[in-house]
Image (cartoon, rainbow, N blue to C red; front, side, top):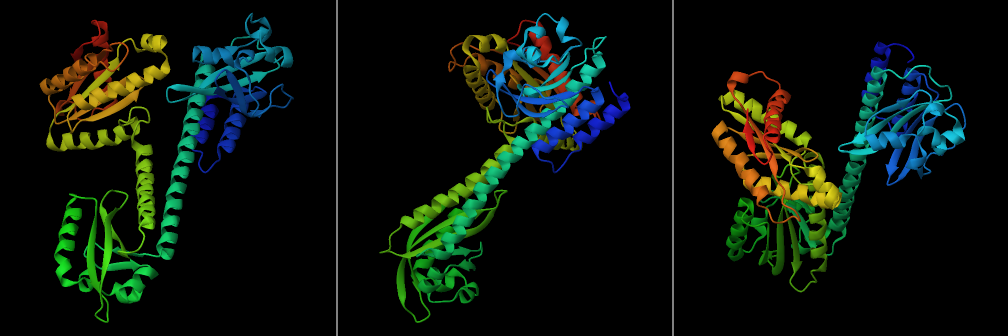
Length: 480
């Protein structure tokens, strides 16, 4: 290994602090660093697609029988062993290894030493970080070096995951921006009247069609509220609908009503009103669509659809940050925020906080029998049963793989055990799957006697109880 461990860890720290880099630039930083630290000539970051391995970025001082972006059979590469075992592997002299020397890569390149570590994103192997050199090593690679390479591959996996999430976030943001741009264009050019009205009834914006319809300029409308323009006999019905929409009883309403122009002319309109929300869900303003009853309503429907798409885009942004995409329950990032809140509340009020760790029994056997797609359906069903069997104030999280965590605020041990048993029974009695599944559960209740204990330590105690349940026969609840 080139340099010393202090330099290696310092290099890793610099990689972890990378910001404002494209994923290609990030790959280059990792490859340059690992070649220097490990003193090997060839470094490759590859991704898996089925049975193919695709080099995404390579650094080498010599030609290689591989091309960036061009898939090659996984079985013909040294990386197949790292993918198969799921851990870092090394070979100091490939020519002496009875398995690796048969691979096509060795026949074409004569690269004699190899280290490979799987790059993980969540529970799956994204690809492999590979290091190769034409010179064999006289001694095996040391375990500390392999541990360092695994740590580097883990950090790279997190960087790739962040880039994927950022790419998806930008796509959702673009959809949101497109929806806003469409709305603004439609607002200005719509042949029907559209107005944004504040929660207290004042005009905030009015498009040209609304100004023509009411007989006022936009500035004149902004100096008024809708009550002053409404025909007196129609005001009560309008105010009643506004009260209902403000209370959440309805989300929108339609009303045939009359308005009065500056010259005293009374005219009938079809009024459609909806409540616009801020991103945090709080009310922002009303959007009103006003047209003569004889006018066509096709554009109204299109505008409503675009408003719905805008709200859905905002909802997807929130979902990306807080929900597990498979099961629809909280992910670990959202759980961490909830944990911090509930721990602070428990300490402030002196109330207990219960942790229930739940793990599906023999899930690997289930996956092997039915396949991963059916396994995903099973995880969704487990999450559904947990939601139904827990209480409204409880937090249900997918902790990883087939492991789940329930967080029960202000809950002592007896009630926490009841909830855990209810969850266990709900899953065991489910008939929605091709084979009956069971779970084991471990319970730990935080009290003020543990004040100051790290949250990870509290979760570990629930995990300890879970494994006690596993040892004692599975499909049971244990408390520690």
